[in-house]
Amino acid sequence: MDKKIIIAPSTDPCPLNDLTEYAKSLLRDGADWIHCDIMDGKFVQRKTFDEIVLALLSKRVNAVMDVHLMMENPIDKLSTYARAGATNITVHYEALQGTIEIISAINKIHELGCKAGISIKPNTSVDVIEKYLPFVDIVLVMSVEPGRSGQTFINESLSKIAELNTIRAENDYKFLIEVDGGINPQTAGAVVSLGADILVVGSALFNSNDRQNLIQELKTINN
Figure 1 (cartoon, one colour):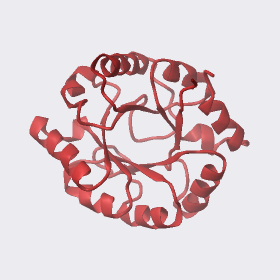
Figure 2 (cartoon, helix red, strand yellow; figure 1 turned 30 degrees about the vertical axis):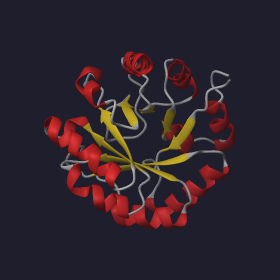
Figure 3 (cartoon, helix red, strand yellow; figure 1 turned 90 degrees about the horizontal axis):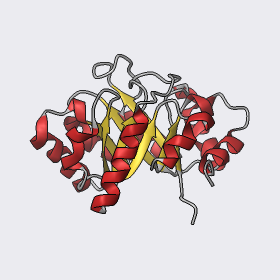
Figure 4 (cartoon, one colour; figure 1 turned 90 degrees about the vertical axis):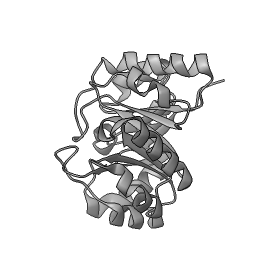
């Protein structure tokens, strides 16, 4: 049976004024989720939109809102983004202060009725999040440095995907592996073959002249 790959286009490359129509058009073209990159200008240098824009987008676009919080102290904002329409909320391991805070964030996201994700930056190893894997729904592997769309895929990310897939299989964990950064037809094959379930696609889709065909190609990359 062919594996179902979830395509989650990133909001990052799209100007805010065009975001609603861009998201709607991607869903018509076969995308599954909308990956909302929320940056606070502190955890990463850039600042993007906030919960106000997310609330407008979630009201106008009927889709899974896959919210990726690239911000300091994300635990303080979980309720805000859940109310704004987040379906999934992913927080960064690097933005939280130790085990108690990480478990608290995961539990709070679940209490708010959302799927909980944990993300690691390219220089963070899988072993530091291994004890949280039984409790999360999504593990987001950043295959570029967070903060800017259009970067080149970091090949060292492949070993992390493989490691997560092995841990998941050996322990019968249920989390999905999501990969964000430099995803295109040239990089997606290896990512999927090693165990990724969700592909976050930014510049490759935004700059494509045939988004429907590209989404279909990514969904069936190894089939």
